[in-house]
Amino acid sequence: MEKYVKILKKNDLKITSQRLIVLQYLDENCIHPTADQIYSDLKINNPSLSKTTVYNALVALQKHGIIQAITISGSELRYDIPHGMHHHFYCKKCGKIVDIDISCPNIKKMSEFGHKVEEIHGYIKGICKECLKKGS
Amino acid sequence: MEKYVKILKKNDLKITSQRLIVLQYLDENCIHPTADQIYSDLKINNPSLSKTTVYNALVALQKHGIIQAITISGSELRYDIPHGMHHHFYCKKCGKIVDIDISCPNIKKMSEFGHKVEEIHGYIKGICKECLKKGS
DNA sequence: TTACTAAATTGTAATTATTACAATTTTACA
DNA sequence: TGTAAAATTGTAATAATTACAATTTAGTAA
Ligand SMILES: [Mn+2]
Ligand SMILES: [Mn+2]
Ligand SMILES: [Zn+2]
Ligand SMILES: [Zn+2]
Image (cartoon, rainbow over all chains, first blue to last red; front, side):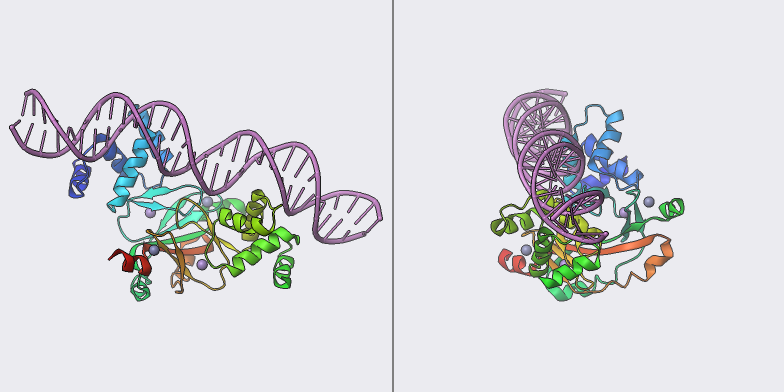
């Protein structure tokens, strides 16, 4: 838990138990959860937790680049602690999101366009290995 | 307009005036509009148009790969006729989405993962050239 | 430790994009 | 031209996200 306190302190964010458990949840569950999923799971052991607080915590953490929002599914935001550069694969059948460990060679090229780049997202959509097996 | 009839026919989609004007709108307005934007603009000259029809048309066109949905902004879906392979830049300040003409060298690599790839999206987020000028 | 202030949390209500659905209209085809 | 399947329409429902005001808490300095 001291690990998460350090992260918040480094980013000049006030230390609250709510931010700590959200951060811990994302760190320990690499499932790219939605805000609602985070809320439901944490609510079990933290009955006083409010959903608005989860949203607020996610916004704060995102603003400081500690976590990132993933828009791949289209109907909801999902969250991730980006340990290293990676892309995401979204299975249209089962809705699963998995990490794809490839780096993006386009990052260097981006400077030519004159825009200030802050985030790069690579989304691949299709049918996952497991669903392919089941489907055939 | 015959151009759009052909596209629908080739994809075994029934020819309706609503689908034609949605298709024409996307073809002539490279602004990556939302469903609501498409509806509002077309409603002016097509007062009987229903918003549900716009949604239905977009789903049908997307299912056949004629158009693509862009999830970059997080709060809404935006649509695009992908003439060639390109990525998208989203300005966090003004909300604009512009095409970035780069190809994705990762497409080849994707086969290694065992998933069936159907779509590839490259999203870059930051501050656009124009907003950078204004802001300084 | 205590008191203070700014910021965070909470619960509820509002908003907004999208979907569901049943009635009506239209398309494709014989 | 007649018919069946599919598309359109309008309205109502859903669900993710945001707004907001009251309450609580964190950080800090006396
Ligand atoms: Mn990830
Ligand atoms: Mn585009
Ligand atoms: Zn799957
Ligand atoms: Zn801009």
